[in-house]
Length: 238
Ligand SMILES: [Zn+2]
Image (cartoon, rainbow, N blue to C red; front, side, top):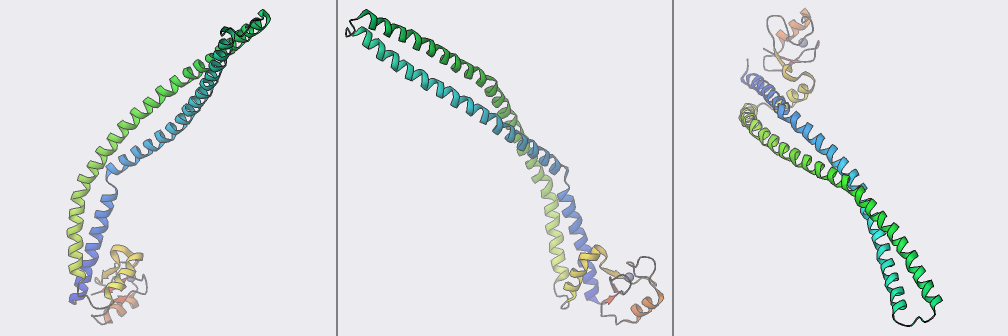
């Protein structure tokens, strides 16, 4: 076999090793763990956003009621001032103001009940948010630890990959023009068996057996040319 074909077979073998290492790298169990944690984090984020929106609505409602109470307080101070600054002389007018104070005070009381209601609504939401934040923190920790493990486990494979890629570069260097391109294009269809060695009377890629005429053609082809098997499309060397 001419040296270029030997090199090409080396390149093919190293490419298979690279593919296997990449597959192992992608399939590390810790990756599945990371994906699960990330999905859990996404779920928690979604739930947190929903609960937080509810909580914000409660805050806004409470603020609106508190603002109303403040306005009522102002109004009461105003009436009280009027009532007690000595300006009111008629008992009827004084009575009207006192009735107004009583009515406004009742109104204030009902609004204050509303404030308490909102505070009661807020309580379970706050505790839910706390739980969610604690769960989230735990997940963040787990994620960090899993990513750390991925780095360590991945590192060994990456080191090996680097070495194999270097070997591949060496094997591919100096190959005759076009040879590598032909192989690489064929690899998309035939992967690890793009280049096959003619053994006895068989191209390893042919589905059943290589037809006799095809064997004959392959055998007669010049030894320094890649023979393209007409039966299966692979490249045959000998
Ligand atoms: Zn074939």
